[in-house]
Image 1 (cartoon, rainbow, N blue to C red):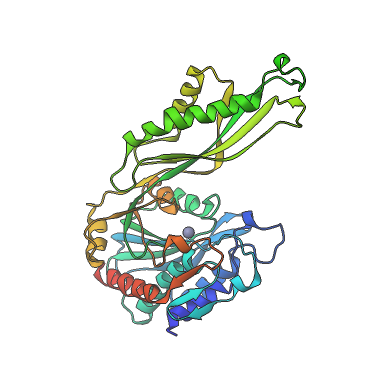
Image 2: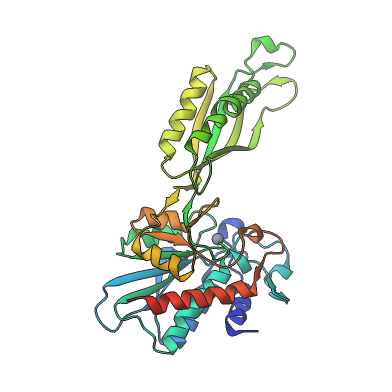
Length: 376
Ligand SMILES: [Zn+2]
């Protein structure tokens, strides 16, 4: 096993479940073990490290590779350290079979973290520092939930030429991804005895009508906003509930929806569109944003010189798009041109037997290494 794959296996075996997906006090929760690992490896190679507090007990790790002279450019590697939940103990064991390394976080996104850390440490060990470019590895907390880590990093308004966010892209440079807006629809009715429904107003049927209106009159129009790399925006209803018991006309019913946005759309305008459509149908339904899991879309200009240089090194003609959202949009909104790049396929992320291709991880190291060598 090559050293970087050994590191990846060790990272998989350090649990870092996002605390939002664990019970309080659960020993697998939190990024601190991975953070300590990153710091140890970096320090051993003579790199400066620093904890950037995000909440009371969670912190991003910043590893800095400073050029010998003045800093004229800056690039950031930004993988996250947290994972989704573990449902069995064997997910915390790294298992190798042929080209596959299996375990929680293997692909999302400890493979990117291992590769990015590895190339920095290798370059430092061999004294291959860029002359004018500061390279920062920002290992972030909380990507899988509220993205508090990238929000904290973006707040510093650091001048950055390019941020490479580590997520599984099958080693493609991704310059655009969709944003996400979660919505809650609440229908209001009037309770009555189930034997005399005409005395009440049924919130469930009002809600059903609202959902059907959205499906038949709103969703088809989304095609007009089609994005060349991402396709059209989408709307999907994910949860519904309401009512108390069969013989009571329900006075409240609710639904939760996931609206994915393409670049150029914004959450406020989307809310307004949906509200005005439901109003036109005189439906007694309120629409509210659910604050969690709201992320703007990402669109970074592929002709940006540092993006072009990265595409060239990867010998990739056209940039790619991704359907999932990630920290890249948050960093980009904070003024850093950002792309997404990393080994692994998102089809394996969050699955029970999450795995990553060992060969892809090694190729990622070679590609990122070549990128470092090209930096001024
Ligand atoms: Zn991820």
